[in-house]
Image 1 (cartoon, helix red, strand yellow):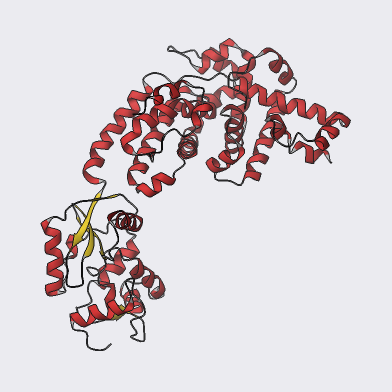
Image 2: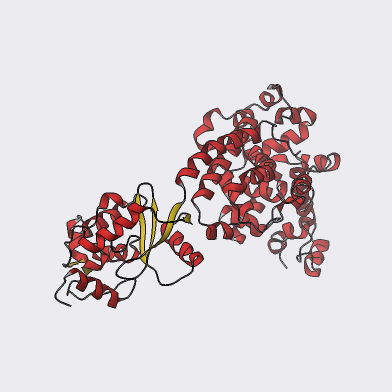
Length: 214
Length: 245
């Protein structure tokens, strides 16, 4: 609708979080909402599950839920809605349900038992986590370490360090007090430090950051 | 400052927050353990940050939009109740309706459309849109004021809880010009302890008049309360033929 919308999409994830329209989110503008948030939610779901297909289905499911929920809201409710944290929350809930029911066959978790499985399991198609793994085994270790965290700590660490969200926004997404969020972030880092051990220093000196540091 | 105090501030230090103050820095300079730990913290944060951003497949957005479009067609026909005003012996009534029946009845207190819409939306917890009332809605109002009877099959309270629905349906069985107590409804619907809960259901009744919450009074027979004022409750009962006031 607004000409600036097109260019806003191309900005990096963090900058795109800013509100850009006075309109309350609605089912009428849903395509714009999908367009704006799909990358971020996909990235989040991918880090949470370690699995590309799961992430795709989670994001699709999350948007459909969001659409249904928006359709049932009054305009007043929609105007008060904080879209971005709300969408993250929905994505997280879908992820949680999915991992709970899929646990025994989850590829990512299988790979934890046998790290080579993840390396050898190449599929066709563009940009898969498996290919990323081939590019750098060190980063594969980081990915796997993240997947070993309990769900709530993984969510806190992913939102903080990969998605670059602030403590108050994470608190809103997870529906927890800020103090709890900070302590979860800390516990997550402490566990990752233990898993990754001395490799932390090596990775930090050889890799370039992919996401803008906040 | 203790190590544990400092550790709690690392995340903020890393993002350039206020925590990078003199006391923390002084502690860091002194404490080798904390220096090591902070480096490790930063290292882990950096590692996570290095994980590449993975683009979703191009097929994702079309797939989502296709799914959503099929839902949208469904929504168009069903999601917004109409609302409007219908004249009555009590003055204008505010009503909302959907295909399946009247979903809201209230007394118009002269509010503007926007206020009325917000009020109804808050009560129904779903969107409504301003529209001319269809003839069957006007007929339902006229029928009520000529017979004081209501055809409950043309009222839609399907989104209320089973308890709320049971209490309102029971109230609809009270004959015009008579009253019953909250406790009577509670007993009749099999929750003898729930007189107060019944009172709350009556207070939130979205379909006033048609579900005659004005015929429900407290155990002593006092009119107790009414959303549009106790005087109106007395007036409606008198119009219906209720003798004792």
